[in-house]
Image (tube, rainbow, N blue to C red; front, side, top):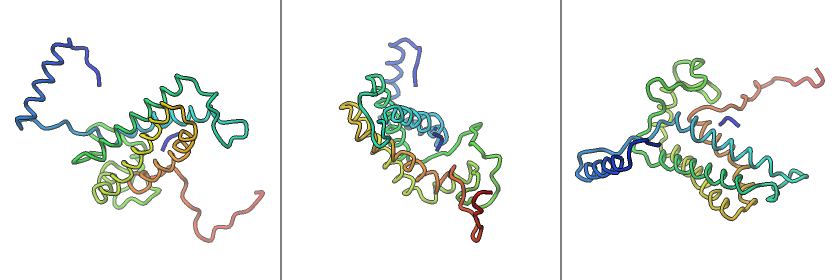
Length: 206
């Protein structure tokens, strides 16, 4: 992972539309809105808000670098942490509960998809939307498990932001990269380099 709805209509119109939509759904004439695409979730919600969590955590490290100092964080920092955690939690929960998932809609671009090859994608290969879609559909339970794990971690952080608990912030922010990569590796790919070929000798000093 990268270290990565409003309206201007009059209130009466918005309220009326909402009531009509709710009535239609209750009557069975409308379906609930589809979940946002996985790619949209990764690029616009997960990545940007994870970066916020990492950035704020980094500024709070003590002089030894082995813990966080609450005195280095402002009230605004804690508000941003709360909001970032809430947004990730909500989106992860939405993806886990969605009946169907679409990796990318028409016109959506996956980073690096131009380098993807056909056939079965290996861990360190670039991925096409089709390959990611097939991987998720082949193990939807596994995908959901990762999404729920992420949501729970963010719920912990959201609660901790209200009490300004730096111990929880440290635990969650330190484990966030692992939570993200745990899902990326089987379904999306990883930005970690592949292991060196077997038998390759490392020459020190050259």
